[in-house]
Length: 165
Image (cartoon, rainbow, N blue to C red):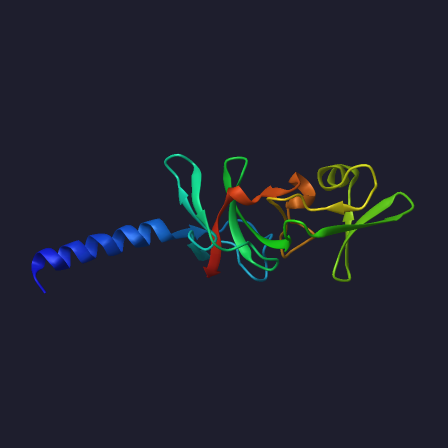
């Protein structure tokens, strides 16, 4: 292989790596025990879509975010790692016991504060995750700031899928 072809292949490979992957260091314990504080994560930025970050537009979308995926997303200018609990269009099952409200997820009852209830629900009717949005939760539910704190996460804010630590 000539030096020109080798150099060209190297440049193309490096461009792909920069476009497709990102490395992040975690801070906080809301994803414990899955992800420890200070761990290095490999994020696949092309897992769901082909973004053009120059214009902040999505060119192609080829895979939907699924419940159980661990994703990196933008929230208030910060990059956050959480697990997707409910996909776009999924029903939100809300249970009221007197003054206490719970979000029910597969036999797991998460207590919702009045503020959390307002973030996720409206008018006390059957609720669904809006199209183009997700419900995300940290694995350590007692300390995690997640959709219970800041509401739904827009799919367009997903930066990538965490592949491994």
